[in-house]
Length: 316
Image 1 (tube, rainbow, N blue to C red):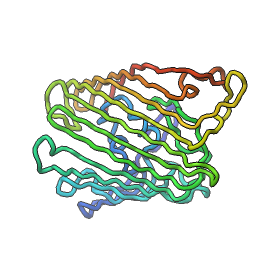
Image 2: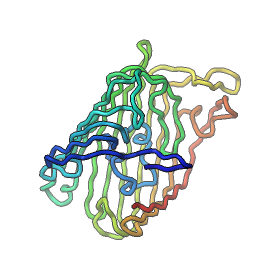
Image 3: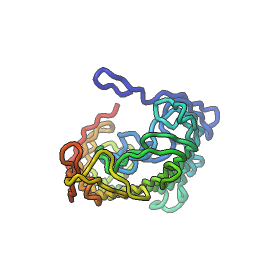
Image 4: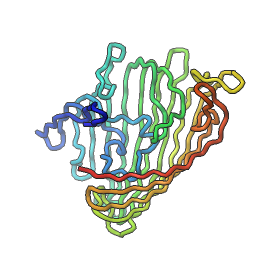
């Protein structure tokens, strides 16, 4: 539950039935089976924030029912989750969006009995499908710190997310990569809205112990490269904005590329300090953090901000 300024939001509320060891049934509000990065609790994140693509489009908590063996892979090599969800997060569907969302994730550890350097490789595929949606705004493509890199557009029709990820642990080293692509239908005379992105991460536990999800103590160096792309298929005027000469600002695509260098200090099993340096480049000059002049005017800018992010985390 999140509590802020006297207001409380319920995040998790579910029952998990464990009659069959490889087919648990979970009912309530919980995370959809999709991106590993979203399924991980904040305690296990390698960086201060999740990747831009996961922040923008990956599903999180939703109301639904799921059959799974998450956390208890079959013979240590096969894991899955399949469910049907509300598709609106913690909000109930309205009459315009009555169709449910199907979500599935499968992960395999193909070399679990192989050589030590390959035994902790996990490869996963992810999918969500919504047959009908009628929303005034689709996804909000944005950086992990919340800057929206593209205007929000109305969507009308199917929404399909696909993607995959890979994780590898060996001694003090670990590496992770993820790709997600989303296709959202728009009106019949408009092109589909496509959002996709990837990230590749590498971590080195400088204090030398084996890297696992639960690090008790130590120092770690982390590096991430990532990209986010949005494409509306055809040019359109940015809503509510003009350029400095009073003309409509047309756009079709936007891309961002980010590089993050991190230092993690694991003080205790539930205490972590993270320091991240981040540099982001925006390829659409009208859609950058410094392109807005006043409330309704855009001007070209080659902004490539540098940021320093710090997190002190106590996980209870």
